[in-house]
Length: 386
Ligand code: NZQ
Ligand code: ZN
Image (tube, rainbow, N blue to C red; front, top):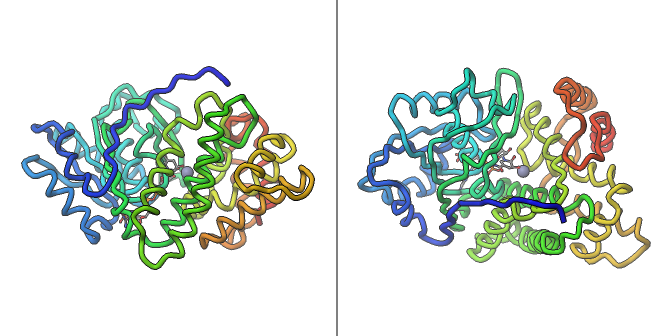
């Protein structure tokens, strides 16, 4: 196991009706900005519940943060934070609203010329406006991490950054808040959680028994509970609470302690979203099988462990077990109703060339962090996904 530092200060308020408690964690005299997305919270009752809980607090609103939040939109909120002396932000929504809010919180106190540098040039975040979250979509883990991903319309870029300064002060996780999600977003959440776990688990054996057991447990639970959520006519509280807590645990930093992580599927997937608007999880469902196939020789030990411990595959020789695990992974995404080929989304070779060029122009030494995927390999991976 590699050495590691683990720090996670996020207070989790989990369960039915927990929104009532958020007022206990926001200073009484705070000047609050409530941030949200395209309006789902105004249709499903979450907005009313949050406003009720904020009784006695002063707050302004900023709505319209889109899926894959845009820098251009977020900068409008930054202006409000500065002009109105906002000193606490409450994000109510899915990963996009939470990520967008992290950027707003950091950009409002950014000392450089252009806060986009936080994403494009890894400019350090020295301070951020404190914020809390009410999560409405279980997927990204943003509710319990310091990461955020922001897109820029002007350049069709989608870039990630992270800082300890943008951990939420608290996150309300009420599984009932996910009942109003369309099935497409439920499936997206399951796939995103699954791929987060795989990005941290499926590289090389490192003597990380605890992390491996946690990762394999999360994967098995997603395989068991995911299809139930998609197939059942009515949302079930136990099923949604399991999926919600699985998503949080998939990306709250615990799984990556002491391991070599990958993140290549995410890096490549972000380009597909930036260029073609694919939902984040859809981009992962397309790319991950290609990454597993491309790295199956280099990562054979962990892939075999995955085949045996997650999919219970016992038939065939080791190579056949690995191939079967890759096939089952792709079938699982399809079972959730997501198409897994680039051609399903009208994406062809010209996009592949453009993605490789973008990575080359950015001077990336390789893709992901595990050192076994070079920039030119991205073409091989993506061509196998047409
Ligand atoms: O905008 P509204 O109207 O709220 O509608 C949203 C949106 O259209 C809707 N929705 C959310 N909660 C709902 C609901 N509809 C009905 N009922 C509810 N309870 O769902 C749509 C998608 O929402 P979004 O927030 O975009 O989805 P998700 O949570 O999957 O977030 C995706 C974003 O997170 C980033 C992705 O790249 C993408 O930009 N990620 C963030 C990460 C992190 N912070 O650690 C890691 C991830 O890998 C990911 O990259
Ligand atoms: Zn993701």
